[in-house]
Image (cartoon, rainbow, N blue to C red; front, side, top):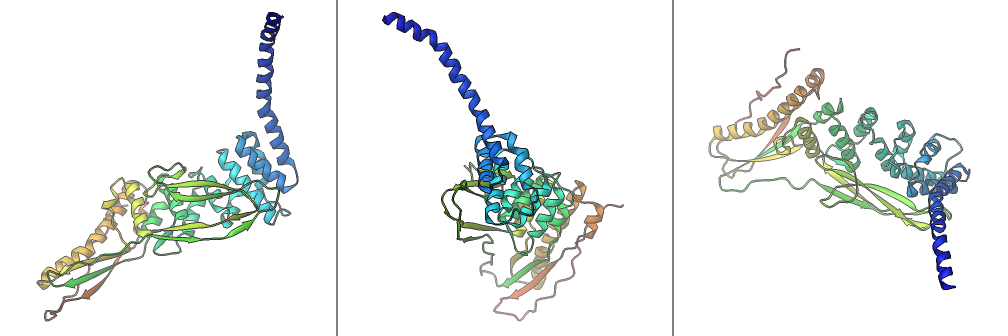
Amino acid sequence: MGLMECNMKTAWMPVLILLATTALAEEPARDTETILARLQDPRPSEIAWGAYLAGEKGVKDAIPHLVRHLRPDPIRSGEAWALVDRALLDALIRLDAKVPAEVLVPRLHTDRRVLALILIGREPTRNRGLLLDRYDRGLEDPGFLDIGTVAVGNLLAGSRAPGFAVRVMRRAPTRLTIHVREPGRGTVGLGSSFSVGSGDGHRRIPEGYPPYVVYEFREAGPRSRDKLFAHGPHPIVYRRTSRRGTRIGTGFTRIRYDRAEVLNGWIAAMIGTKPSLVRIPRREVSTVHFTRADGYLAEAVRARDAILKTYWFAARRLLDRKLLTLAEAKSLEFSVTVAIEDEREDRSVALPPLPATTVAPDWPDE
């Protein structure tokens, strides 16, 4: 009897394996059907869950439905539909989807702008005009760039976008302060120009919605496991965080970069040279140890003209690489404003005025 039972179990084994395999094969299909059905449901919570699960399960068949829900609909407003919108964008990011820019633009003016930028950045050539406009909007602060603007600039520099180089080269005059001292006294330097801020807050999430997802840009670290957004002098990644509950924190860190330093890094990358060779600062200081008037004058002129030479050298290299048109190059204006700080104890010898610079751009004939 034991032998017969054993043989019967052995005989049924292929059937059991077949049934198990069939069930496993049918499970993804059932998942897809359930997710697509939820995306057809008129209730915002169901659509949000459908989107969340589509991203979680990798259901690419859901992409057309997700994009359709992003289309303008006048009756979809309020906090519930904003949660749906976030879930839709999150799913499209996780599914590596390419989304028409026109449905993403309205999200650039909401708290979902990072998600929208991630999707727009997947097609930097097609979305060049939109990215240039976004970059222009990030130039309000004359001294700093926020991390989102750096992320967009990385994309534009990396794709050699027409119209970007001239934007990078248009800048306010450099302010050069020359400290004149007796020999033996120290030199004067500039402090750090990196800025970090933070904010805090909370948001209430209604019952019945999927986890609240936050995306934020960060600078890539040496062991970063975050998703790369764009290479550059400051490579930018994005991090996805899922938060559960009905009251979630919305704290953030605001990072700002020295504007001139970032622009110089983009120029160096575009012309193919070391960043240390492209030094066009917003502010600069120099120390001259006075012994004779002519020696002081030579050092002061050298400090001023070195900045001008670097600027026009970079402009010419960009022109030669066809990243600037000749018309764009000739439209550029740049100068160095010099302030003299006479800190000598003995001022019996007057400091002579600086002559006008002889440094000028060298453009080819048209």
